[in-house]
Amino acid sequence: MIAIERRNGILEKLQEDKKVVVGELSQLYKVSEETIRRDLERLEKEGLCTKSYGGAVFNENNNVEMPFNVRKKSNATGKQKIAELIADMVEDGEDILLDASTTAVYIAKALKSKRNLTVVTNSIEVLIELSDMTDWNVISLGGSLKEGFLAAIGAATIAGVKEYKVEKSIASCKAFAPEEGFYDTGDEFARTKRAMIERGDTKIMAIDSTKFEKSAFAKVMDTEDIDMIITDRKPQKTVLKVCEEKGIKCMYPEK
Image 1 (spheres, rainbow, N blue to C red):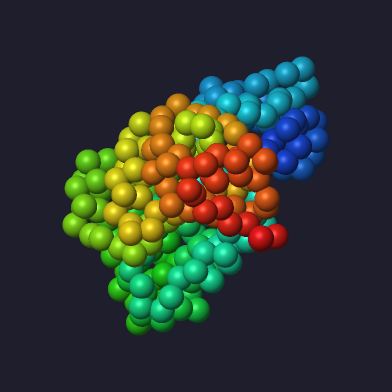
Image 2: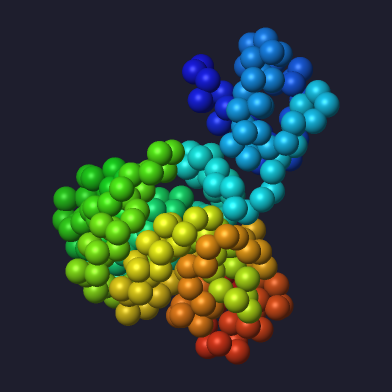
C-alpha cells in the first residue's frame, strides 16, 4: 500500500471513529509507529486532524475539504437514498446538470436506467461513470483541474455553463444554514456551483442531513434561490419551517 492510500484509510477511520491510536494503525497497516506518526503529522498540516498523545482526533472544521475518495465513502447510504429520490423525479429525454460533488456520482449511477438524457457536468468521475451510456448526450465543461479534486472549476467552467439551459440543475454543498443559505469550503468552488445551479429551470440542492444547520467559508447562494432540497432523512423542525416559509419543497425518504 502506498502512502496516499494509507493516509486516506486513516482519514476514513478518523471520520468514523473521530480518533485513532498510533499503535493500532501500525498493526493495521503493518508499518512502524514512526511511519504512522509521519502520516498523522502530514494530515495535521493539511488541517484534517489534530495530533494527541498516542494518536490523533478528527478535525470537524467545515472549511477543511477532505480528499474526494474519502468524501465519496462518507454517508454512502444517505447519498444513495438521495440519488434514488432524484432518479424518480427525472424523466427520459430531460436535460440535467450535475456538479462535481460526491453525491452527484451516486446520482449519475442511479440515473443510468433512464433513456436519452443530456447531462452537463464538471465532474471527471461523473464523466467516467456515464462513459458507457450510448444513447445519452454527456457534455463536459472545461475549466481548471484542482489538485486532489476530480472537478473542473473556475472562470472557464462558469463561462462554459452559461451556454446551456437545463430542466433540472442538481448540486450539493458543504453546509446549509437555513436562515442564511448554502455554503462550500472555497470561493472558487462556491462561485462555480452558483453559476451551475442558476442554469436550471428547477434548481435542486441534494444534501445529506449531516450538513444541516452548519456553515462554511464561502456562500453558494441564499436559501430562497433554490426550488427544492433533497435529503436522506427528515430534517430538523427549524429546517422544515424555513423551507415552508420560503416556498422550498423538501423531500426525504419517509415523506
